[in-house]
Length: 222
Image (cartoon, rainbow, N blue to C red; front, side, top):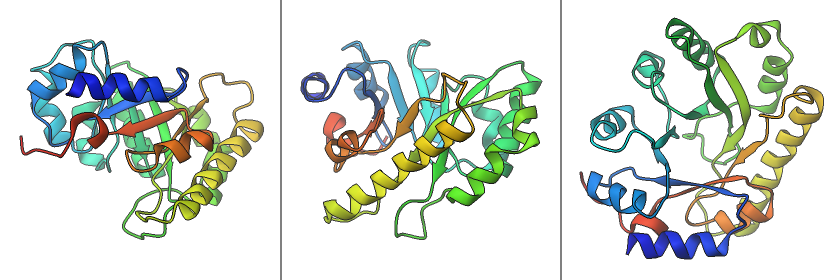
């Protein structure tokens, strides 16, 4: 089932769009089934769950941290993480940079924007990111590489509202690209869209979609 789901999804989307298979709540056996199709990019929301799985799985998996990351847990993921999509504060970015410097790694990061109505979601405002992107402090952060933006739309059946939120995130990405990252080819990612809204996200410029239930089915307890 999982292999069929992955094949079906990839037939429906442009080849340029990356799929992060969100394996939160799914056991190692399910992740291995997806891995055996050739898929390599997986996302987890919680550090503890990620740590409990990663050593039981092949070493060439590209792990993305997509949930809220507490600064005191940064040191646990920095040695192996491929991308932290959920950098939602300057304090967290500093912590990632400092931890990566200690082990001579450079960590790919996305800046998470708050684009939804729900106040429970995390993320920067555009004004905060403008200040950060133009700062000397960011220029001095040698162990992080800002690769783009990420956002989560409002949980709603109103797809026009979702579309507007995705349009806004893409406009933030374009402004940052034009004003602050013009000579940085790695600044190329817009991560938006999940199982319920990925088609709209792709229409509005998403380059990374984060897909859980469409691939794995209903979430299980591990």
